[in-house]
Length: 336
Image 1 (cartoon, helix red, strand yellow):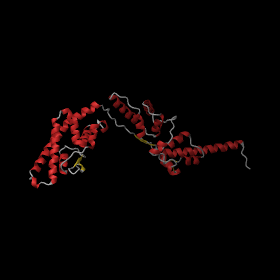
Image 2: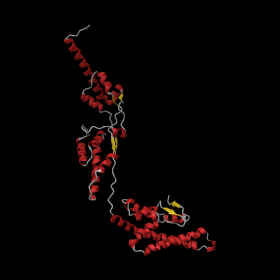
Image 3: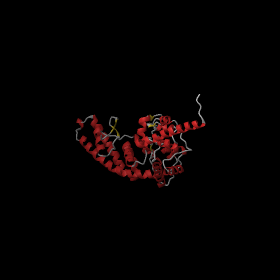
Image 4: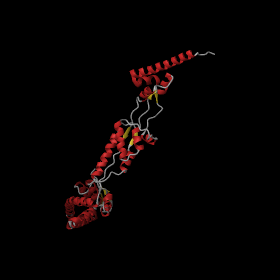
């Protein structure tokens, strides 16, 4: 059996180290000249870690004790978000995405929300932070196609120098991205606010009612020109319906102005509600007194399909209004 002297053993160790150091130096020279592509051509790529989808990433455990930020600025922004009530876990998840702009964008959204609430004399609810976190989509950094570090270390015969290894591990790793959710700010609504808005809307309804009256009178005049003996039952029903609706319009104009709002809602039903929401998008149906919300289930009566469309084109009815025909059938009116 061959035996190594102390000197021989040292020489063997020194030669082995030199060979490994030489190979490591060669690796870094290739990288310096040809980049990650050159090393992948020789040693292949490491596909052991698949790309992380948003769902997979969100399900991972994150280390809240060792959060790595893309910059000191990002860290300061994260601390500001924490003061707003964002949890350590949420901050860690956003940081782990690798998105360098995520904390700047988050802070901008939160500050915008804060200003909107303060403008109403309110404190921003903590639920806003929760909603942003839960509704945002996080995609982790793509880790496929990395330089094959294990193959390189096998060739060298030992682990790469820590600094060199860190440089190579970062190559071709695409930062993740975060699609942030921005809550819709809904201004607070008081009963007096909605009453004022309804009264203002009624001013416009008076002009619509006058337009309808002119169309109804013209149609009634046309039908009355047909001799009684020559009229069909349908035409007689039309005259009756036109007369009834004209009478309702006249009754409304005989009321006090402050009493006309509900009368218009009752006359125009779902068209009234559609028009009001269109003009006042900050209000929701749930904000209205019950006597107005019932209007959604009221279908204005029209003497015919043609009359319904004429009133729609004249701007009396809103697009999408459901009306009732003389035979009781309901149809939805549309300009399209």
